[in-house]
Length: 275
Image 1 (tube, rainbow, N blue to C red):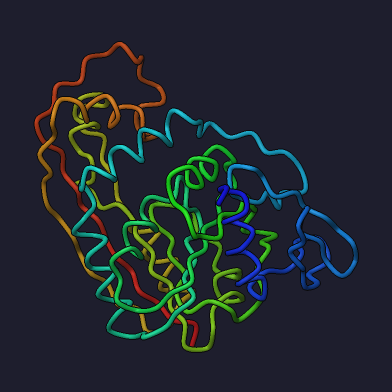
Image 2: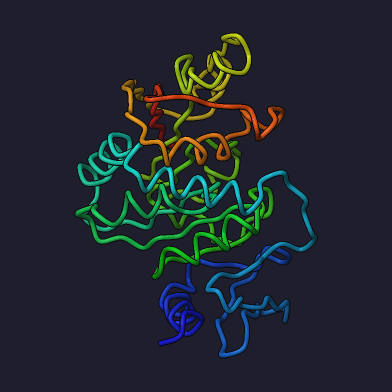
């Protein structure tokens, strides 16, 4: 089966999750496209995703960055994080609709749900088309969408779990999308996250996530926090991808040498509910 046909099949199975981002009406998946009750139509890409953006958006997140992230995450660097999130899902749900908001190239979502015990539907959305294209290239049987969190193409009260991993938040949208018993799992960096890069390029520029954590607590209920800190050994082939995958190096020349044998992962996992 061609990738586009497999994606259409998955979309048809789960079209009840979707709505038109323009008029908020329900949609139908046809053989040619996706169309809503008001006849707003969106094309399905041959690579296996759908673009719900109503106007073009330019971002600095390019194909090279997303391919580098895929390489890094596939190496196992974030496996302790994925394991913890799987546990949080499996402790609460036997079946669940899961969405990754700000999914990028989709690798975090894929590695979480591929080994989760719960029976899940899997959706990912990002404003960066290059990220969603990379996600569709590498991970099948997921509902990959290019879309804006401020105008998202999903029905209200639909998702049990909203993931927001190292990505900007939109709390009004989180609350709209989640079921009454749903939860947001937001991952934010702590002071030691990728500190080796800051030490190499910025003379140990201080970082704090205090404002981000405070905002999460202001907007969500029953907040729990887990700290996750460890070091990950780097093979030489991972170092160039680490250099390319993060905005930390956007202002650093690509020919600057980066000699690392390990890197620090230091994260807060925030779990919040809407009620």
